[in-house]
Image 1 (cartoon, rainbow, N blue to C red):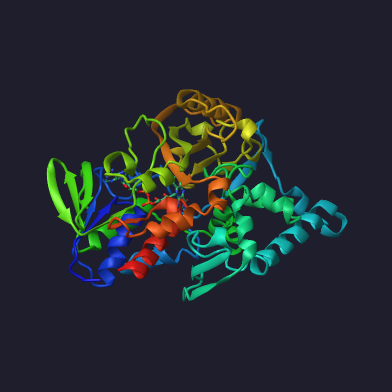
Image 2: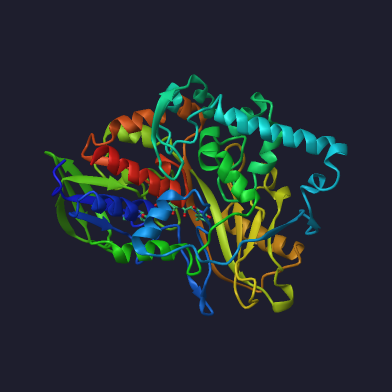
Length: 462
Ligand SMILES: Cc1cc2nc3c(=O)[nH]c(=O)nc-3n(C[C@H](O)[C@H](O)[C@H](O)COP(=O)(O)OP(=O)(O)OC[C@H]3O[C@@H](n4cnc5c(N)ncnc54)[C@H](O)[C@@H]3O)c2cc1C
């Protein structure tokens, strides 16, 4: 492709900014990043409080975040944040050890033996029966193929045929049961459901195991995690500052028209002409959101195939509150509440995060989900109140909420569409209308998967 083409990138989050970086590294310097908000980072949002930054969005990474590492190297920064640590409470607010059965005499403990053997079996199944499962993105999965780059520092190109991969379309719960490893859900649920990614009876296994490949999950178990002192937003602020063409903030895209091999973008009242467009912003948002976010199909001249496919996308309603407590009510550490990670406890507090262990004048952030495929969606205000009531039960009541948002989170499709090859149909459309689709839906809703997808997109098409 001609290195001088004009490329418009919609969105200045991890996917959009890293697309800019990888394009630039490949010699494409004529790109423009349009960002709707007055800051970059998207769901990596780290506001200031009392001289420090807290996290309203992304918090952590793992050592296999190779694309994030590319960004760190590009900017000369590193993961220098406070060490994460956690404890567990039950729904009554009592400190518990959910893996108590893991302590003590394993030989005499049948439950623990079962868990250990299922964990081992699961690791082996992923490597053998599901070879190719951990490739970034979902290309080929529904057809029983894999094609992409290995999750290794060298990111070697790999491809192959593996009909078993079709199983990844089924909900993770069913997938585990079918493979005789139901207990592994108890380990995988911590960094999945409480991190806002939905429930195992509704989310296709493909999303679960691509994000939480065996190594990544073990890193969470062992708390072998990365954080950033200035917050995850800092990574993307730094990247933006190092790009030849930093994002244009406050860009209100009113219209996108694609005709005669050109892309016309009306932004803040002016029409701009491009040759290609990469969209990393939401493709489709069912209903109306209180924050006014729109899906691509609403401001692009969306074609019938785009509308038909993208209308299958759903997303999680993940609510975060940043609260202050009285000093005597400040939690000692971050807490996970496993009892609340089931659909029956929708809207309840699943985890709360104390970021700065050395200071109690900092905020605590709380996390709750309020949507499940087969349940009544809990209204925002109701969920907000439930979380505050839960904090009282946890004996860490909030005295004030200083920040909050309900996030358009983890766009995904459900099992039927996954099995019917939704991803292969969208992948086949890449470039068709001089348009490329990237961002969370194309891989998974975390910083690294989205940045890695942008890397591959640039590699494949530019
Ligand atoms: C509470 C929470 C906790 C999380 N924890 C983690 C974690 O610990 N680790 C991790 O790796 N990830 C975590 N994530 C997920 C991670 O933040 C996202 O997956 C990642 O930011 C996705 O990057 P993206 O660029 O695809 O999308 P986004 O970050 O959503 O960025 C999209 C950008 O597009 C912009 N945009 C939208 N519409 C338009 C438009 N019409 N025109 C122009 N611009 C537009 C948005 O303003 C935004 O800046 C968390 C997220 C949240 C909310």
